[in-house]
Length: 396
Image 1: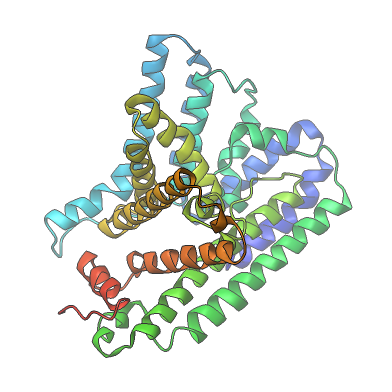
Image 2: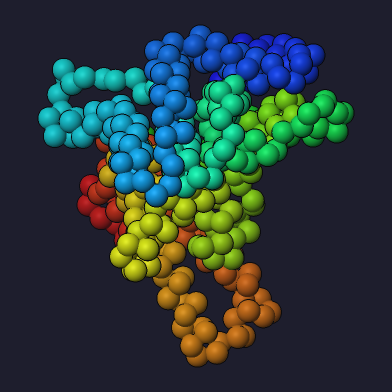
């Protein structure tokens, strides 16, 4: 949406009105502006989300902890919103894979569906635990519909959203917000779109990688995947910067989503720095419940990364990407245990931590084989690219 003039017009018209209004009306106004803007982009999706939001708002107060029937109501809400997500994001792709053809139905995925689904699930779970007590409708509507963060996150927590609000306008927040927006725009249009998408791919693109794979050298493929990694990171984090900056103009400090993952020392550290709100959500609502139920850390890790992979897209490539990262995290866990068991403390000194950064970034670059989005690209195509990284040419 940031490429549309209407987004910026709505933003800079809404900010002064927001601060001129009495405090009791501000978030209702911002919720209405967000809904109105999203309605001009996709009316059906905005109206459907309004129904879901009001449903969750009305039923969440009934989810008091310790009541079996109320737990069943919470589970029903979660299954309902997940079913809505699946109908648009997963079922059409599954049907297409089973019976592909020229007449298969094409459903337009509602804008921001993955983000607000996880927001609503978070709201239900925390309400059921008794951790959410603020029942302001305008705050909840604003939390769900906040248009700067609607399509690219972060996946804000409701308690954090309520806690990080300013009562009065101040110059520092405005300067911080505008600075963050400018940094995001530079990161997006100069570094991501120009440098890493156009200048550092060696003339390659998603659709030509497999076609030219047998003629490419292994270093060229590594450079392409590294450029793809940097493009995804800069592009995604730029949207986050813009969302955070726009929210700051309204006195709202939303959650950070990236913390320089290119300096991660290991795969666990990487996922504490990359898409932090998604990894935190999956840790709280997937990893910990699975670990508590089965007492198997490896199973919990794979379950969390399956959700992380499929949250992005319901494809085998995204599933493979999630499993690949889960394997990397588990490999590091095994390595850490070995270091502790044998007392290999020298790995924490000298140049070894820098070697950890290098190994981590190489692993993440190699995982980009699952994120190539070319025509006809599939799991075998990803396997061919992976083999090429190790000087092996598999047949087309």
